Length: 193
Image 1 (spheres, one colour):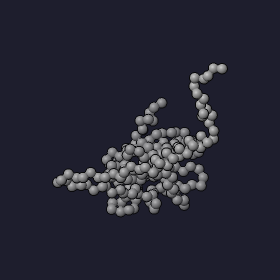
Image 2: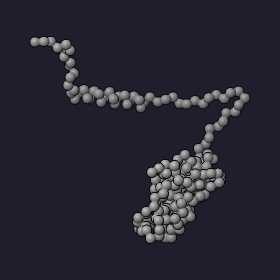
Image 3: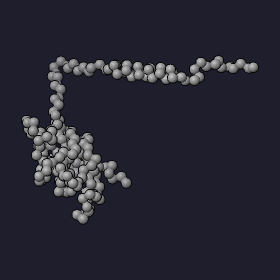
Image 4: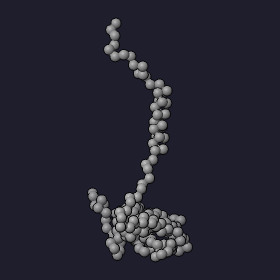
């Protein structure tokens, strides 16, 4: 009988105890990493003769609660379907963009998109711009606010004969503040075929 060149390995078959040991070790590493936190940041010392700047105060974005939207809903109320917040005009104060429609029991009511800001020196919110008018009979999907721009997919109708249940036109839209108004454009990625 010829001897093997490799000594017999004791652990050639895994047993449940090996898996328990491995799971325990992994759980220990995860628990240890959750306990280890980076140190707190410290402010740099100002050089002599310079004033230290105060940290900017954060301003809460305007709330949609209690806002009277310029939407004619008759006996039903206006519903905020979606909203996003961000600093659209670069003034350091966030705005809120809201997708609003009438609370209809049947059908798909058209959406409106409004930009809200706080009143000067106050806490109340007010509508400062209409990005989508409900008269346009559009439904807003894929709504987002990124990099000081509002983007959305708009579902609409090619003619008045198209039933309200079945929009047949899909358009990508992007709104960005130019210093005096929100300009609508088509996002670059929407041009690809």
